[in-house]
Image 1 (tube, rainbow, N blue to C red):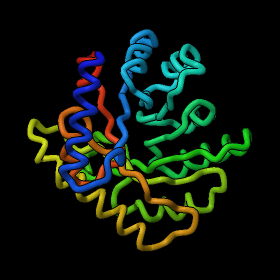
Image 2: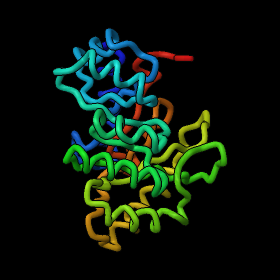
Image 3: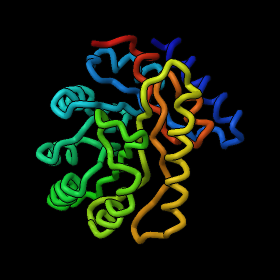
Length: 227
């Protein structure tokens, strides 16, 4: 596992430098769905600092098992508003907010524990009906709604392009998200920060970095295929 992680980190660094960006400006989020806490310990020993989980209940077990380790937990799966309480209590960053209902629920739960919850908005750039995420046309309305929620801090955007064998086919979607981020930035909406672009996975993360990703979510290249 250490060799695999070292190779991924090396590829990230090379892509960052190749795109003329500052070394260290892209973080690896190890997508750890269905991976045991024991395996995650090996990944931590190999240098992983952020894990991305898809299911709240599965993640809680691992978070408890690895309590005290120098790591961060991100939620990268579809989030239901009824799980907001648990998400707020256990995750440093939630990548997948896509409705005002979920945002309100997170804000309410964060307020109860005096926390400012960092979030990203998931954008369905491709318009696929099978994917979660807010449409590009509705992003601004959602952001304006979130801007008034005192216990949420919007840090940026996330997307998942359609699956493709060729990473170049993902490029237009990454570019579109980066352009959307820049457009939102120019509006200077109060309490909204557009510092993060969570995009790129095992098959296309280098292309995502070239288009401005600040976080890449890599699972298969680290842990292998999962069911």
